[in-house]
Length: 212
Image 1 (cartoon, rainbow, N blue to C red):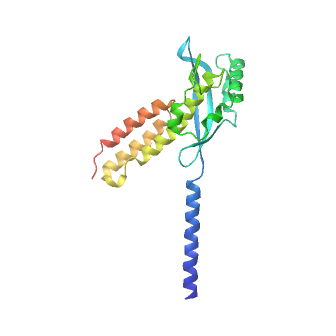
Image 2 (cartoon, rainbow, N blue to C red):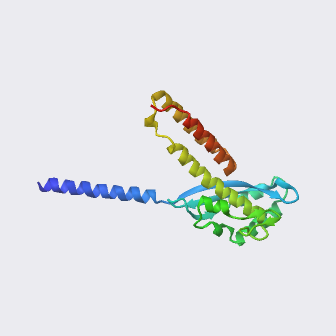
């Protein structure tokens, strides 16, 4: 009888430890990757490019709030050094200005919606949330953060949008195909606006499938 009691106790402890691990894993911060071309100029228009991209990591908590934005691996500097238009020196100076202006810190504790509302302005016409003298970099970082957050949220939404159990086998296969190909397509898109548009189209395709 003691052995039975003991095994129940061990099972209970095992279950508790598993539950704790699952909880701890669920609350683990998640690191996302975002990139955006540095572009835009008041005289030359929105398509003007500076010849490099910002490449950043966005760490979020389990509620989707930003813990930090960083570029510890200096991927942006590597992009500047690749120098496609011969402007490495000035690009490096502007990026240094952005970093010394603590641009990344502006994102702490923000959600997707908060980031969308940030007013960084446009190169040549800075907004209140831009780093002074580095508006193009400020705009690119905002776009890269949004690309990372929107891509992550969109993939999660796509995967969980429909329950396969509600569909017959043939429709289930179609559902799996749309989700699998949809995820791959979303990951190829450069801007968060493109990702949001593509997600809406994928959801329409899923809505068209017949349930049991």
